[in-house]
Length: 214
Image (tube, rainbow, N blue to C red):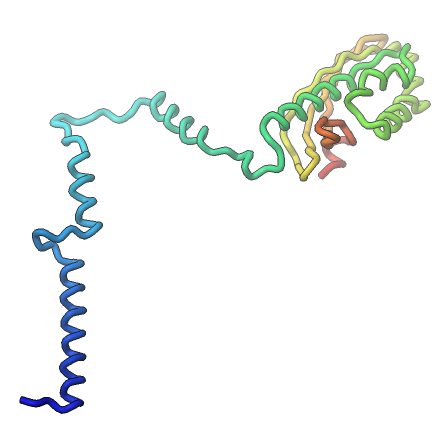
């Protein structure tokens, strides 16, 4: 029987729909001989899994859990998000600690030049002038001389407060053991900023933690 043009178009359209339906059926059915991506992965995963134990398995001990947590944490490299490497941070922390210990160390018979000389490789020339002027402040210098003060300083880093592309600000506690006519001990928290200068760190600022370098 001859089909009209419209009938031929209708038959063609029905044929396309039927083929599309068949393709969908073959892709998503579980008939034998068909290997779609998802069904083929499930048997492999099941085959590789160990058989269920016949007796209950005790939960992991605390050391095992801690070890697993540590392993997972060690895989996270936080330095990929920071503008400096781990060695750079360690070097900057070393400079800050050494400077802070020197900052808290002095003797009443030292001049400002003597006092700042110990720090000259750790600080900028501008900061050396600021520290020298503070050391020579008349009231402070007079008490230091009258009480024959000698201070032994040490320092502990408390935290990293801020950082930029070439600078880091640490919160650090400086401990001082003072001898003389009025001996004693004191600990003061400072914010100390270091900047990267030609591959080396130098201290550029020191202020009380409660008032500066926020």
